[in-house]
Image 1 (cartoon, rainbow, N blue to C red):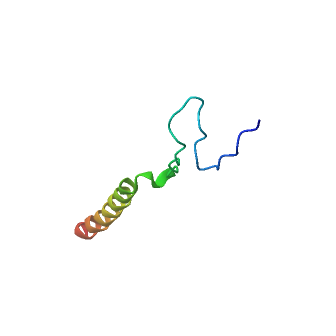
Image 2 (cartoon, rainbow, N blue to C red; image 1 turned 90 degrees about the horizontal axis):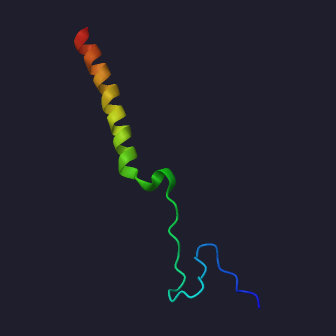
Image 3 (cartoon, rainbow, N blue to C red; image 1 turned 135 degrees about the vertical axis):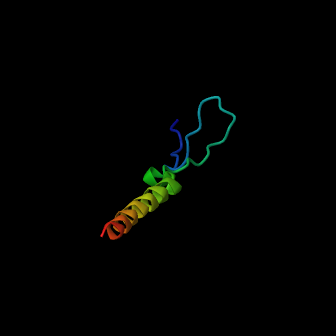
Length: 59
């Protein structure tokens, strides 16, 4: 007897398992931690701004 096909988003049932198939969480890739990337961008903007402020002071 063939097993029924399981949609790609779900975990297939295991032998002897009493739990039902659940939807797997999608991998977020680099967007998994958006606050980290926002911090990196903000830090870069502050450093570039500080560079120009110090150049104006140096004149």
